[in-house]
Length: 292
Ligand SMILES: [Zn+2]
Image (tube, rainbow, N blue to C red; front, side, top):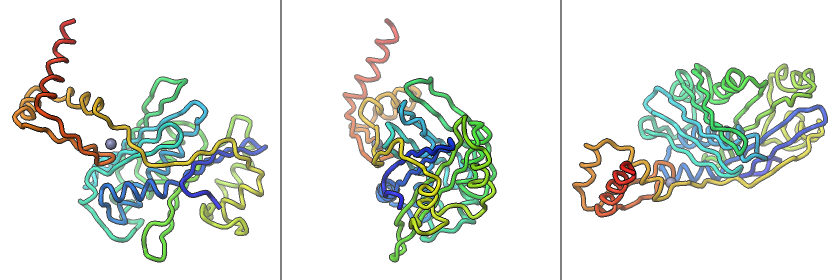
């Protein structure tokens, strides 16, 4: 079985690479913070799982920021994976289309049919770089596969799956990514991932010949890295200050009319109460820096 709330990186002798990211509790936490419907919780769970799986260069602490413009009432969806084991994310307007059940046709209509993806990769070795793809797909998995194949130009197979419990609530959500290293056996890759239309069950038992656990065993995949994965935000007062300093003069003045300004982090829901005196100081300090 694939471990819950973990990211695993595996490699076999044929040069094939697998990354499995299970973000179950992180998805539930995003659901709690934002009071999401089951549908939205599954959508953010799928996107968080895939974002975590895209950060394959874990040795260089690769981070991924995904901005997913849906062009639907849901608005923009954002997800970040960083330091190899933290994720965070939110849907801009989840209440615009809230369903208490999952329907793949709604995933297609609201998230995938007219999507624009901005993927930023950053690591210890490289300058951050952004790739953009326009995707018109049936599912989140398909959109991200098209990003990997078009923009990243790597042969990649990506699949995201979830499971509901008997209570109808989200029980598991995970993403599975298979890629070839430069020395890989292309025929084996094609046999396992391209020509095999049935896919692999991420949550299946090792005894089940169509499960990912069976595949890992049979093809001799060995772990090269594993971490616990959890929801964690990077917001702090400094980040809030930097974002307020981006505001134009008129909006700044509006904020200064209030005794206290409340700023809420979109990712984690944390509220920051900033007194007017602090705002005045921030805005004045910035002017001072400008003169020097
Ligand atoms: Zn936050």
